[in-house]
Length: 455
Image (tube, rainbow, N blue to C red; front, side):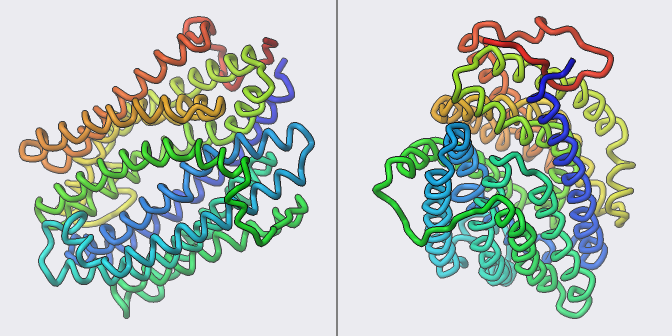
């Protein structure tokens, strides 16, 4: 019989997975219509390059890096019935994230032409570099909004509220879709950029009712001397460096892709998005739902339940991800044709990129829960050391494979790096939790999530 915590994780995973599914579908509609409208053009490459850098800025400051440090602390206060302290911490975090993102975005907007020329647009023409810089400046407005919305999402998830956070990405994609459908025919590449800003506002506003339900209290204070905020920052610093390492690898990949034929940057980005469809629906959904529970077990010292949750979650992810990997490798061309329905010249490099990324799908999926297990224990340094080493592997492989395999080689380099990363993390976890072994748990007919195991 499933324990209460297991049932809670299962229901939450289904909600998150359903939200991710609809979000991915609307996201692919955005990309499909945009690809059909602009084709494999220099404008399309400029849009994807302009989007990638601000998204990486968000990931560094107020994305997963902040969530992985904030949720365990916030959940700890909730578990101890210290809600006033929890909202005090949340206020300090959201205020700090907003200021940091605003200042960083302002600097990036001012120096956008130079940044583009040195990074994501290194192989672009001067005109294409300037277009990319101008697009990036507008997209950065959306990232400032996300600095607030991302913290709100973490707050709701820590309160075991997953429905509105699951709707938020859907609303964002609908905003982008509106820009693609209604504005792109007349404004060209500026249509989806306006949609990005609109979507970021929808992403925030859809979650406000959740804050009201949980009686959120926002305090206009920074609290930079608050020991709890300092603890979040301390936990976040290695995570930021780790995410930064991943983003540097991505920037290197985009930069190398910009030296390949036109459309290569877009192909690499779209191939990644196709691979992320099963990863998000399976691994991210399960790991997102399990993370607050993992954090709760860790804060209470219930290592047995933490170990059981980790083991069965990994087994579930493996059981669901392997068939998805095989399907992408065998049917990748058909999947790309179904999703994008563009010319063969556009779809072929996307398929090559997809095949390379698909080899790393299992690694990316297992990494979702392996890394979160460290964060649940408020250990953000170990994943950092491993991520930096994996980044070196990925970057070296990118330079080795770019000329011989093109965009497929760049994607395969990513797969090699993440595979090394997750193997090392699992070895460390096995030693740390003593009995984390996939062989301890037999597969059930319908593997789901862990039954209760007392420490």
